[in-house]
Amino acid sequence: MGVPFQIIVEEQEFDLYAHRYGAENLLTLPKSYLDEYDTCDSLIGRSKGPGSARNFAWEHAIAEGHAWHWVLDDNLENFHRLNRNKKIRVRGDATFAAAEDFVNRYINVAIAGFNYYSFAKAADPVPPFVLNTRIYSCLLIRNDIPYRWRGRYNEDTDLSLRVLKDGYCTVQFNAFLCGKVTTQRMKGGNTKEFYAEEGTKPKSQMLADLHPDVASVVWRFNRWHHHVDYSPFRNNKLIFKPDHCPKTGVNEYGMKLVHEQRDLEGI
Image 1 (cartoon, rainbow, N blue to C red):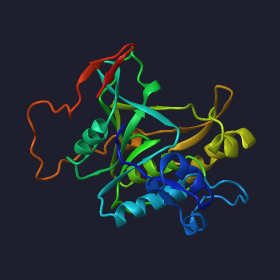
Image 2 (cartoon, helix red, strand yellow):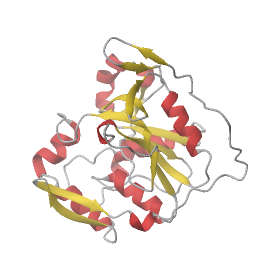
Image 3 (cartoon, helix red, strand yellow):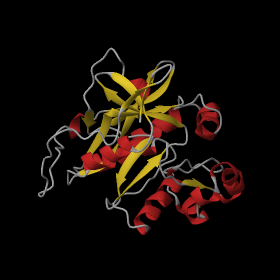
Image 4 (cartoon, rainbow, N blue to C red):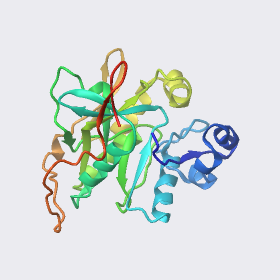
């Protein structure tokens, strides 16, 4: 896609990732982040999840002088623009740049991100974005908010709930989508460490324990799920920056449609 990126790896993984992605694109996770990470439980000998690496990414972004940072799951594939319910694949950084410009209009957006490709059905009209819900997998995070990742499971939902409870807004884009290998079907990672060995109830229960006012554990589709009531955050309204000046016209961020053999690809 031509988008600059960095991958956070543990020391023992460095050579393997360097061979494929280049050492210049890697950051080594300091062991202190793993040691100090709050899993919100007393389990020993299990993976702590991605939160420690995400906290390191946050601090690294601050040290580099950035006001925001993106953090992406490692099983995302392809990015799309939703236009008139057509999902058009985008190559390049246009959707990222457009999302950044959108949230920078406001003083109270803490987290934004792209919805999943599979959640935007062609037959169902969807709004360009949804406010004040969970942001997951592909997140744009404001660096100066007073939070950090925590929890072995559902750390994305926990972070979203903490910012919402303090009056911030979250923005989930439907106009911009990301593809993702279905959770609990991809080999390795959390699938092996968490779901295949212990089921889904511990991760659902943890969220209910952390946020009993809005989260509960429910049995659906033959497994345990967490259910979150986001209705208390309906009154979190977007607030424009004082110097915001609405722009006229349409900015396509360099995107133009090209026809390829099997589908439409955006550039």
